[in-house]
Length: 489
Ligand code: FAD
Image 1 (tube, protein in one colour):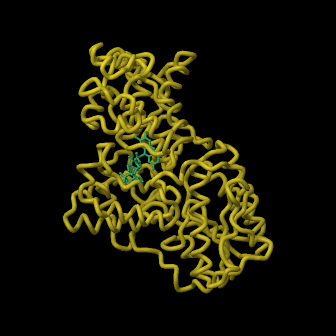
Image 2 (image 1 turned 90 degrees about the horizontal axis):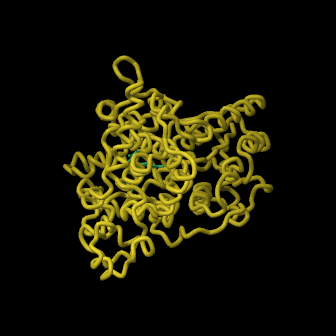
Image 3 (image 1 turned 180 degrees about the vertical axis):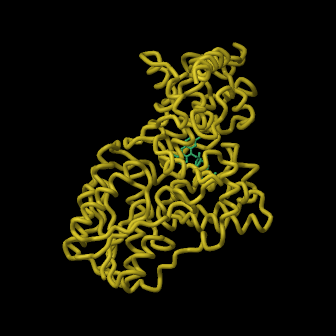
């Protein structure tokens, strides 16, 4: 039999569930990746993710040719509507089955259902497999058979269910000889960014190497400091986290490999590894929330409150809200930690987890703006944008989610700044012109004495904004805003 492996967000040949199945089941194996016009059409012309994917396809293609031992083998790369192109290619190649890994985002489910229908009409099967998470969908349920909506019991159940087989790699090598040559019409090189209609970004200047090797390099770097993870991870000026999120997003690393390594280190006594494994479990947790509670996001990727009563919250709207939102996006709120974080996002496509919590809380609870505006902005900017994790993170911060921050707990952006960036090293990385400020003044410049500002060469309102809101007042307003909904519920 002949089969077609459809690579999507799993851009690696090793330890790839669907690819391993395809190789095991088929004598002849073809491989395709589609730059989907349905997705690319919605993106800005400079998008680091498109570039990251393109850069990651090059080593994937090389690895496939190497496995096949033939330059005529390798990846067919199309720029088309995936929904139509995959069934068309499957028919051209004369395969009996298409293989792909699960993607539970609403738009992907819709696309896959359409592909399945079209393939079925041609007598071709679509086989899909779990690959992106350790446990998924309904695999972990409470004693009453319901999906989990609270993290701690989910984590306990996850750890109790786990056995070595769940983390074992899907071996692909034995049938590598099955990789077929590409038909002559599909032997073009991988399209360039320009051919895809995109422009280069600053990706090459960032410490974010793409592809399988890039993932392995970041992993190696992280494993050397994983034992300190739990102490370092909350301080954005330190190299605490792994920076592997983009690789998890596009599957240039395997979640099983990461969880396996973390578990090994944890068993060897590493508290850092244990904490990190818990973060990987948070990832699984939000994936299963999206799969089991699909009302949290629609097909366009826009969020709806996990707890529907919170959809009644009346957020700020109109011109003032638009202006505050623009100040937040552009890092001009007058709160240095928030502004530095928003600059980090814009300039690098990454934002430290602590700062995602701080900026999300600031938008929804200090500016009183609908968290969905922020969710959409993050979706455009984050290299690691993942609907499940982003929606989960935003709903956590805005207190509308499952197992969220309680609604009356409101981060104080100045206290957060003093606690997690005590010397202001992170702030100064993105707002170097504040270098003359010290101590409290760096975290809350409006509280600086006039002489201090003068010595630092800063005029508030000119060189750096005055705060766009007063935290204490905003806090009262948020308590009222949320309280009104709680009373009615
Ligand atoms: P590490 O600390 O090294 O963590 C390792 C991995 O664990 C991460 O790569 C990620 O896959 C997973 N992980 C860690 N924390 C979380 C979490 N809270 N929820 C789910 N998974 C987690 N993560 C995304 O991958 N994509 C998003 O779009 C996203 N949006 C977020 C939005 C908000 C408002 C918040 C508060 C968090 C969001 N997160 C998102 C979660 C988290 O901030 C990032 O996963 C993390 O900062 C990525 O950096 P890292 O790989 O260096 O993390």
